[in-house]
Length: 124
Image 1: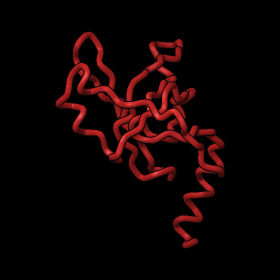
Image 2 (image 1 turned 45 degrees about the vertical axis):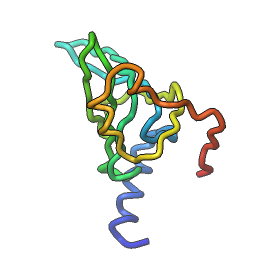
Image 3 (image 1 turned 45 degrees about the horizontal axis):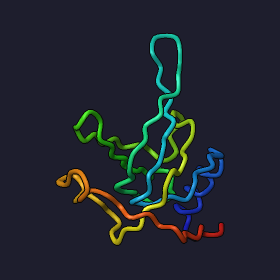
Image 4 (image 1 turned 180 degrees about the vertical axis):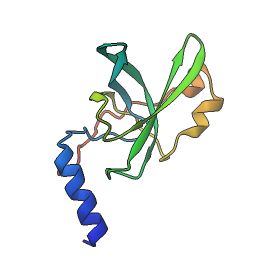
């Protein structure tokens, strides 16, 4: 392991986040801390993960897409953000692509993703 990868691994370990194993195509719920004035609350954002960038490293991020009132809404979350309260995998999706940007042009039944019923989690 080179020096940069080792430093990055130490930074990720110091954060102590437990991030579930998820990939593009999975339906996930992200509990995001929102500060309004002096009070802080957790706002859940549920949708399909359409991309993961930079793996599990400190600079990693993922994009979640949902349909809200008939409009597609995408949000990019840093993987190791201190504002993320929890990431929950709701449903595993079976896809053949790493980036699902083609879902932006689809609506209704053509935008559905098949469920992966026999998913095996990777051992750490």
